Image: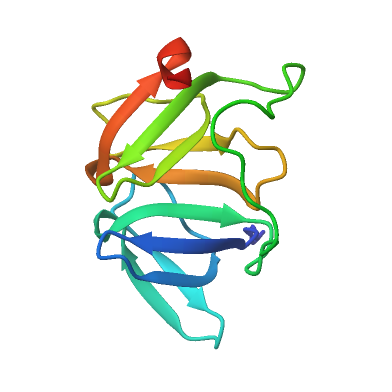
Length: 141
């Protein structure tokens, strides 16, 4: 019996600053590469280590008028799960959220956005693109 995997809508942010949108059905954090199905249908093999992060998104457009909250002011304490995390990338972008599996020895980790209105569902952060990580109460500073 063939098992179908659901495709995920993603926005890839590369370390060099470029951004590419598409779908993937085979992203696995432990694997060094995966496939991206571009919006025009062509398929490209992606080297995870070239990326800054993989943003799993609700839509490609997002809400252009919405400014995502920085920090933890909008979290719902009833639904918020995991440890608070603040990630500062080498390009100085900062994201706030929760993590269930941060380990500094791994090649990457997932962050669930702190802002419940975010267009991001989850973000896979490539560790080599990170300048600093703060956890727990330290993430609030």
